[in-house]
Length: 153
Image (cartoon, rainbow, N blue to C red; front, side):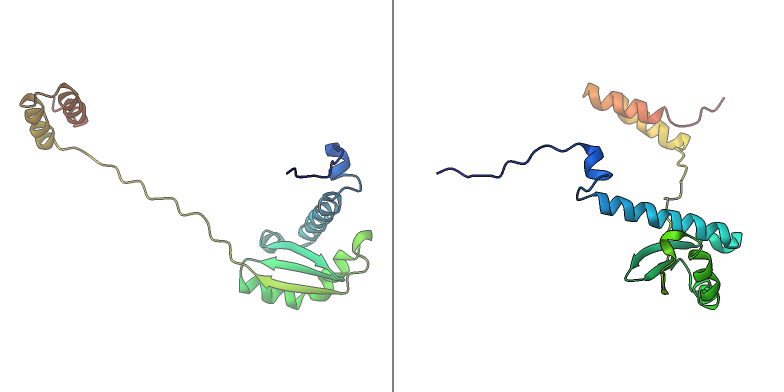
């Protein structure tokens, strides 16, 4: 029994991304949204611009995403000014509405660094264990661990 598969002709990356390929429309929309975001941020006050992201464009409505409810209130209040600003771009002259969403950005939590110190007493006990151990690998490991204690003198 054999499986028959359709043979597809290989396509260049340029054709897939910039041409009429399947990814072309996705890439064009991403570039369009990026341009809208740059234009929008250039026209907004600096303290607000870093909190506004263009989320998508569908059926004449552009979605703006912000990371806090306080910015959402400001965006709603400035809706008409934002529409005027966006309509300056030829690609967005037909924007009919703005949708707003809040999506808080949670920064990655880095674990707090806890410096650990080995006391000289603990190092002394480790050395004593190493001296009493017959296994050479364990002796070496215990000695190396004991060497992490600060030297007294």
